[in-house]
Length: 283
Image (tube, rainbow, N blue to C red):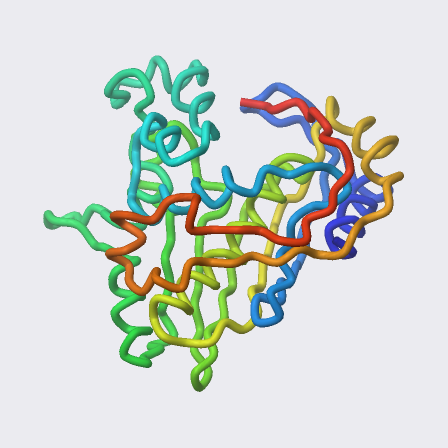
C-alpha cells in the first residue's frame, strides 16, 4: 500500500495535464513508476483504502492465460471487464474485423497463446515459457508479449500491460512486467494483483519458489473526473496491513489452468478495507 499511495500522491502533486485522444478527457500524468511485490512473503498487493474486487482481476488473468477473445467467456469465469471495450467502443463497433457482439479481436491472451507467424501458423508464447521453466531453463528470453503492432487494427484495444519477462535464479522464479499506460485509480489494483498472481501461478506450475515481482509503468495517470475522489477521499484514508493470497495446491500444470480452474481455487485472507469508491471508467 505504501508504494501505491506514494505513486498516487506523486501524480496529484507533480503530474502534468495531458489530453487523451481516445477518451477525449484530460489526465494528470507522470512518467515512470516502479513497483515491487513480495510474492515469496505473500504480501498480496490488494488496495485497502477502498474495497477492491480481486476475484475479477484474477479471472481476467485466467482468461488471458486461456487465450480468450470474447467478453462472454470472461463473464463466464467471473469478470465483466471486457464488456465495455468489446461492445461500447465506437471505433471497434465500426471495425470490419469485429465478428459481432462480445468479440474483442486479437488482443492480450490471443497474442500470448496464438501470435500469428507471417509464414503461417502461430506461436504459443506461454507454452514455450512454461516448458522451459519446467525444465529449469532460462534462455534470457522467457518473455510473453501481447504487443503486436501489426495487428492493432484487429482488436478493440492496444494492450496496456503488454509484456511479462520471467527470470530463473537457482530454484527461485522472478517476474518483470511492463505497462505502457495505467489508469491508477481503477486499473492499477487490477494490474498489480495480476502481476503478483501470475508469478505465484507460474512458480507453482513449473515447480519453483516465487521470488519478487517487478512492475514497471511508463505513463501513470489519473483522469480529470477521478481526481477529486483520489485527492479528497482515498488519499485521506489510513491503509490496513496487506492480506494474503492462497492458491489451490492441486493446480499443477498449464493444462489445469486451461481447463478446470475457477475462482473457487483462490482465497484471500486478512483483507481489511475501507468503503468502495465509484471511480468513473473511461472507454
